[in-house]
Image 1: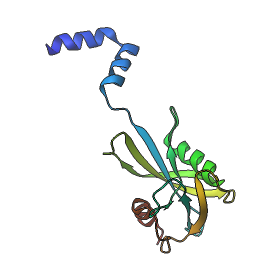
Image 2 (image 1 turned 120 degrees about the horizontal axis):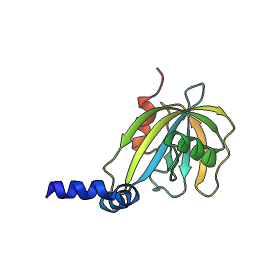
Image 3 (image 1 turned 30 degrees about the vertical axis):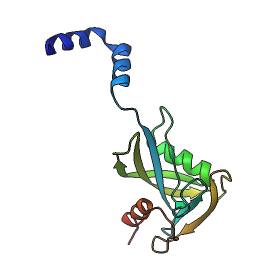
Image 4 (image 1 turned 90 degrees about the vertical axis):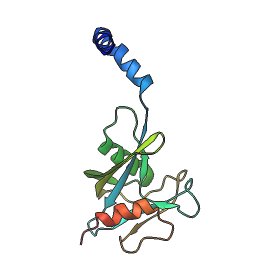
Length: 151
């Protein structure tokens, strides 16, 4: 039976194989987070309108669009949410295990722009030192910030 399946698979090649793979495997959204730092080692945290009331503070975060390289997702999302220009850095973390989502976090260096809020998603934004983060910061973001803090 395996030989027959292998022969059929080899025969159908290309787009039909991809279509079968698409329907038989999980499809995920990719959430991308940027741990942005300025020259002083501070990070911008955003008070998100749509996050839980007890954990509204977090890093710039968004979803990758089809065909987008994940470091460029960081650049785009940070710019959209904060007005800051960043250069993506090293990959910090890849987390799976969510139902239809995987999470990726990158370091990023602030290279320009000033905080300008996306008034729809973001209520407030401020720069914080890694050791003075506001109450209500997402635990996973606290870990990311402190894991990469200089010192």
